[in-house]
Every structure is written in C-alpha cells, then in structure tokens.
Amino acid sequence: GIVEDGSECIGSFENGLESGGWSPDGEVLALVTFASEADDEAGAGDNLAKFNATNSYEEAKIPILMTMNTQYEILSEIRLDPCLVPTHDEPNNSPTKSINPNTISLCWRPDSSSLALSTMDAPLPTDRDSTILASTTPKQQQPKPHRRIRTFHRTTLQLLSLSKEEDGSGRDVPNLLPVTPTWAPAGCSHYVGAVQSSRPLIGGSGNSGKNNARSRPVSLQVAFMEPNGLRHRECKIHDTRLAGRNGEKEEVIGIAFNLEGDLLAVVSLLTPADSESSTQHKEYGKVQLYHRSNYHWYLKYELRFDDKVENEGVNTSGSVSVIKFSDEDPYRLMIALDRRGSTLPENALEWREYAFRWESSTIHYSQHTIVGKSPNSPNVLALSIDGKTLNFTPLDKAIVPPPMYAASLELPAPVIGITSRPCFQHEITGNNSDDSNNKPSHEEEMSRVELIVALADGSFALLKNGVGKSKESLTPGFSPPTLLTTFDLSTLVFSNKMEGGDISPEYLAFNGMKLRDMTIIDASEDSFTIIAASSPQGTRGRHHFHDNLVEIKISWASLENGERERLDLQISAC
Image (cartoon, rainbow, N blue to C red; front, side, top):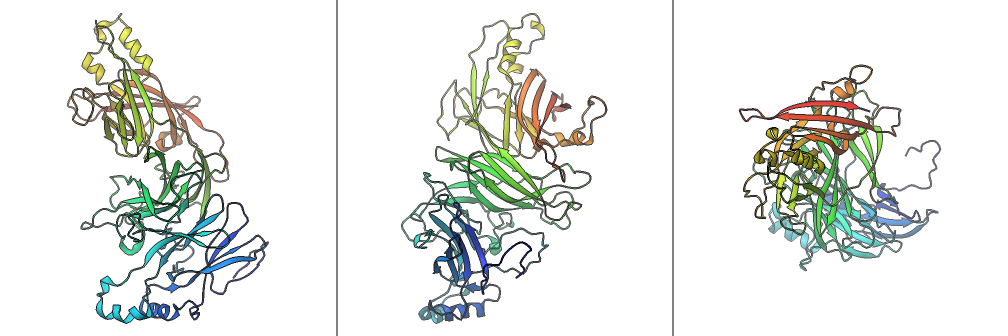
C-alpha cells in the first residue's frame, strides 16, 4: 500500500482490513480482517469454496476479529462465522454514497467495556446437508444471507450476545440493514440500536425509496437490543420526503445516540429518481432528531441540507459525511457536510455545530372577549411536535396524558418551530372599548390566525383557531387549529429596502431553512411582525461565528371567492 508522508507503517495484513475503530478511552483498537480461503481450520473451507464457486455475484470469507493495545500488540482474536464481504470495485470519484449491503461494521460501548459487530452471515450448508438442500429445495427457498449483530468483551472477545427476537423462538432479527449500529450510554433501557426495515429491500441496497407500484411501502425503524441480544422496542423512522418530488429515493446511512441517550440522530441521503438528468434538485443529506418521552420517540427536529437558493450560480446542497454528539454537552451536535457543487472543490467539507434546546411542549394562552360581555374563560392549548404532526391538548378542558392527545393536525413537512400570538394582544383587542364598532365579531375573532409554524423544508404555515364542532377532537367542546395557508420565503419578492441601498441578492431569495427561534413581537387582526435568528451562508475559506437578526412582517387577506389567501411580506435584517 501507499504510505503518506509523515506516517509510519507498523504492520500489514495479507488479506486486508475491512473495519476497525479505537475504543472511546483510546486504549484498545479493534480490527476485522479475513482468514485465507485455504485455511480449513474451522471446517468451513470446502463449503466456503463451493459457495464462492456457485455465486459469482457475491463472495464469502471467514472474518477474524482482533483487539490490540496502544503498542499494537494483539490482545485477543477470534474467528467468526463466514460472511459475505463488500466489493470495492467502485472508482474513487464515484458520486454514490450508498452503503454496500454486505458491509462489515463495528461500534464501541461508550464505557469501552465491549463492542458490537454487524456482519452479513453467508448461508453455508453443512457437509451433510449440502447435497440434500441442492436436490430437494427450490432455489427461492435456499438459505439466504442474514445480518446478525454480536457483542464481545473488550479484551477477551468473549461472545456476550447475539441478536434474536424477543418472543423466545430463537429466530434472528429479520431485515437488519448494513447501517453501522450505535450503542446507547449506560443507564438506558435499550442497549444497541440498529436500523431495520419492514420487509427485505429490493437488491438489499437499504434504499427505502425503491418501491414499485405493486410493492407495499417500506417502513424503517431503529430496533433496540437488550444486553442479552433480544430485540425490545423500537423508534419508528418518519418518512418525510416531499410530496412534490416524485420518485425521490431516501437511504438511512447513520444513527447516533447523545450522551444522555434521550436523543437519537438519524442521518439520511436523498437522491432524485434520475440524478443524471435532474437539474433542479441535487443529492442532499438530512438529519432527524428523535426525543424519547413516555416510551415514545418523537421526531422533534429535522435538518435539511437542500439549499433552495443557489450561491453564485452553484447549488450548494450537501450530504452528511460525519455526525457526532458532544462528549460533554448532550444537546450539542457536530455535522460535517460534503458539498457537491460543480464549481466547489471536490469533496469540499463544511463543518457545522448545533446546540439544541426545546421544551416538552409549547403552551398557547388566549382569552377572547365578546363585545359588550364579560371576558370568556381563558383557553390554554398545549402543542407537541412529532414530525409532520402537531398534537393538541386543551388543558382548560381536559388533561390527556402523553403520548396521547386530544387532536392532531398533519402538515406538509416536519415541524421545527412554533410561535403564537402574544397573549397581551388578546387583552388589548378585548378591552379597547373606544372603537367598538370596528371590533371583529365573535366568529371572526375565534377563527383568526393564532400560530405560525416553521417547517423543515423552509416554508411556513399559518394556523387559525378551529370553529364549531370537530370530528377530529376526542375532547368535547374543543376544535383544534386548522391550516389556513403555507408560504415559502424563497419564492417571495421583498418590497422593502435595506438601509444604505437595495436589498442584497442573498435576501431577495431568502432561505427559510436557515431561520430559527421565531418570536411574534407585534400582531393585529391580519398581520404578524416576527423576529428570528438566521444562520449565515457558508462560504469557502471563511469562518462564521455570528448570526443575523431578521425582522419579517406578514400580512394576509381573505379573497371573496374563497381561494388561497393573499400574502404580503416585508423583511429587514440587522
């Protein structure tokens, strides 16, 4: 092999290295290599040769797992069952980042006491069964390769567990995908997490988007293994692909727990149906953050790196190459992006750091007043985010224990932020008796816009109060908010000017995916003024440690024919 300048070669492996990694404490190195095909020490050599001779599309080898100390002295090694191995015949400049279905991967427990290894075990029959299976079993019923996850002791490599179903049947966990497993921190009820599909995927590629008209949809989840290897509970992975992008393929390529084990990050790669001819949309990455509460995993936030706004004529959408939670702050996340813009340097990287914070739910308080009557009792509405769904519970009428809720509303994209009409605005409207003739009627007041919701695709949704009886509500007398309209900042032309000149092109095509921490600072019957923090656009050779403060005024007006609301937008930046 080639040794780069400044590095030192300390050893070589005749049959190559397939996987490896240092323990979190930096004391033990785990490596996976292979035994020679002629080595029949384990009694599998003949059947291994037969399998490779009859399967030209796949190759099986005998993996060897070994551990070394910091002096690179072998502490222990163990031979594993024969497994299929990935091919490495793709060119180095290949644009695909898909995971090979036969990938061998390992991960360490956070306290460095043990490690987990994921392999695609080969269906090798025994010498006694080989001729019987070949003569009596149809080809479609021949033994199939199966992915298994094993855990081993840190230094002795004693087998601690093997992934199995929890029903006591001894069956292997089906349809595990080649995504590197992740280990939960100590004290969690779950142990090892691995991505699992609802059925075998076409071609074994692990791409959840490969469905045809006659196949049922594929659902994905992160299955959790207990210390004894039994699968117990799971986190459902939300399919949040946009409805307007038909045929878009999504593949989960990574998962990771945070320090506390209550946040689970799921990394995906999305590609157009025809990436060669597609010019409007490029390959991009996505990170979903799930939060655990009451034995339910909520999709609380989604980061999309699909830049709708081109930077100097270049689409700067990027895929996620590395993701890592902080070892000190459980809610700090580091992400490395691989930019695929045509004029950017090949494999140009951008490093981002996020600090997440949120409350379990958002509380919206309001007290509406009818002209000439005493104020009504206050309305207290709790809102909880779960992907594309907003869950509502009216605390003034009933307390529904989560993860249950009184009503819900599904939106076009995952929700990442909510801001509500300030409660003082209701009081001003209700108590201003000088202009009672211009006051809205009770029906108009109850149905007015109360909430602005930020969505992961960069768009925003206006929600108005529900009026009348609702079949969607489980609580009598409660009508949940309804969707009035959605709008995308990047498609609107701003009408105001910045101080000292015209608005720069960066703001003429503003990207809503960079906005966060929205707050309504002023409101009227038909307008909101909000402020939000805006992340700067990444540029080559520059570090950005500041954010922009953006003020946006949104006004709307109902059309007489009942069509879509008319929206006016003004923006200024500090």
